Length: 218
Image (cartoon, rainbow, N blue to C red; front, side, top):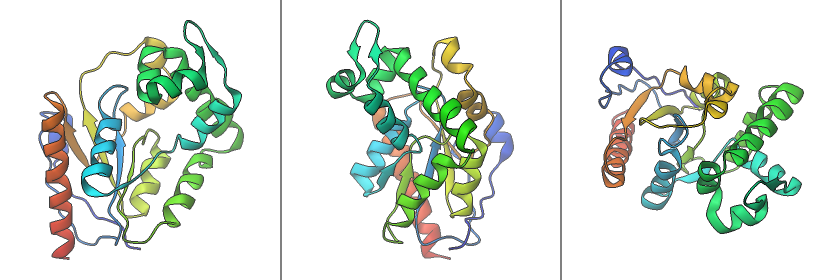
């Protein structure tokens, strides 16, 4: 599987957040996107659209972390057991409405996962799942936060896509190692999300079309 070679205008990444040009020299069979960005920027909404409109398989580095959290099933102050909250509201709303839910996931993923078992513990599990899929199955990873996650995505021919949106989150959330490192990731492509959900969908559609067209001409 060859690695996607991406050339983008770095000034645009750091300055006005417009669509960036992608020039492909070689490309893997699989279309693989890894989404990054701050809490509440629209990563889950983007992953949902790619799955529903373009047939992407949706995975997350945090999938096994969520499974572990549900097994522990801690009490969420003011809400009840985690399993009840997730069943009623889903993970996205639960993390936004009750910061304790996000804190538990951060604790399990970083302090109890990466720090005890190595930084690739979740990466390896995720790519075991991806590698088991058909080689032409497009995949979106909805939560790329760490540098080793981004580098592994690129090693598999993937593209790191930042969803850019002004958001507000508690300081305790943004000060966590996962969010600090995510803020410093240099993406291959930036999708502004300052307008409507429909506009985000159109930007995603254009990205997929451009990526597919580059593949056809390789």
